[in-house]
Length: 177
Image 1 (cartoon, rainbow, N blue to C red):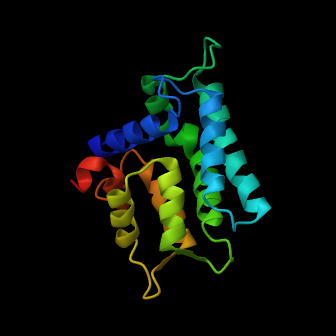
Image 2 (tube, helix red, strand yellow):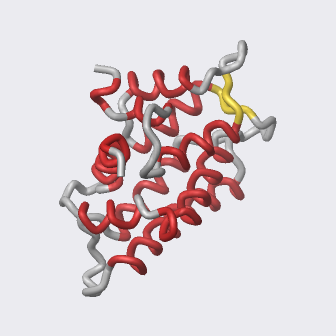
């Protein structure tokens, strides 16, 4: 596993821990889903429902794979063992990536505009400078848009334990410091 993957996952864990108690629990994913959906008011109800379902699937996968003691709490160590194992988490990452990218395309033209991208990534908790750097790394069009599949693939790459020097590395605060 690459150090970059561990840094990316540590950042996401901290963002998903919505109440800051050091562990993940179902309520964190409900809260995050609501925050992200609220950032995309022009998106369809179908896209919003898919995003909430993707967050629910994210939690369910973690709980099913890792919560052996039934306490409904996932530590960072447990989390990183699952999300960095493609055989255990790929389907969940794919559903999440596709739902988030689709939520960012309310007009269905296959392109995500910078303002909505920023709003969605801010709702997740990423820092503004890192969000801007990521959007630029996706090589936006002259109209300042990125293709839905580009973002979806970028999200999937973010969770890949063998990937380095990817656009998603720019989300780690030290990347733009």
